[in-house]
Amino acid sequence: MESSFEPKILAFCCRHCAYAAADLAGAMRLRYPPSIRIVEVPCSGRVEVVEMLHAFERGVDGLMVAG
Image (cartoon, rainbow, N blue to C red; front, top):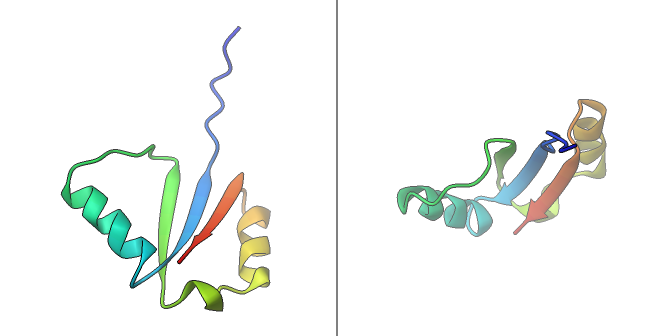
C-alpha cells in the first residue's frame, strides 16, 4: 500500500542568496514540488524562532532557512 503523503515545506530564503537561486531555477524552468512554499526575507539571519514555530502551528511539516 503506497502512501500519498506529500509534506508541506516552507522555505525562508534570503533575498540576495537563496531567493535569487530559486528565482534563477524558475527562469531555467526547473521544477520542484508544489508543496514547497518559498518566502523571501531580507536576511536569513533575521528569521525569528517564533516565526518558525508559527509555521509549524499552521501545519507545515518541514521548514528550511536558507541564506
